[in-house]
Length: 163
Image (cartoon, rainbow, N blue to C red; front, top):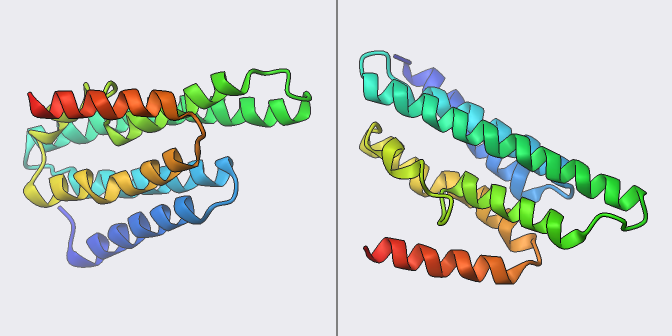
């Protein structure tokens, strides 16, 4: 579908989106980097000649759009919390942030979309999805101080991965 120059452009944008997310100093710029990452990976994974690839790119977009919307809601809650003198419960906001980042990375218990998506991808796109696309959400997860839910997610990932 694409020639090499457009693949290079989308790969460069994907790398740039990850670096924007990892080096950002606010949640809003991290969200922007995640969106650049998402919107540059979708053209790489879609193929007009393969129906499963097109279906996988649509599933990926819809899942990531849902997670991005909730992530943006949590970021706005954090901004309101800072303006309203801590009236909003910080653990609730951290729970929302952690849940959406786990959904974006495809980790348990929010991994329902990941196996269906993988069957429509080529080996190279599957490699990119399972490695590069997880760097930014996992770095953001490391910034959240809500370790109990993260431990539950790790245990669930180990159990689901062993089955």
